[in-house]
Image (cartoon, rainbow, N blue to C red):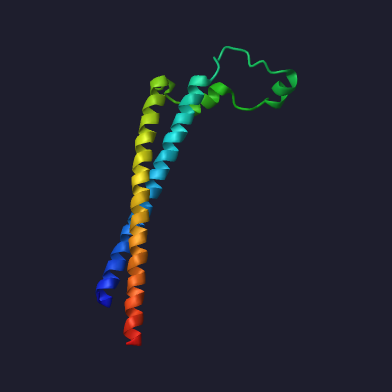
Length: 134
């Protein structure tokens, strides 16, 4: 393998590795968003009825004075709360599972490209050393 060919192969592997790292970061970002959405749906479904007493004693009521109410927070986080149901959790879990499988494939590809790049760099180094010695 000539030095120019080795340099081109290494440059190609470096680019593929950058692409895989970028894609892995993108997938992980989407998974974090899906997990956050799932947490929000669980919180929405688990929140107490608005008309029930919080059961806070006087010290807690004084501490909470001026704090946003659950109703205000819910309206800010879920402007259209009617759109969520227990089925939303199933959909989000399925989406996360598919993203997880894709993340595994991208991570394996990244590992493979990294190993190829290391081998190519070692091979180029050996060829360069042999040229200098010979």
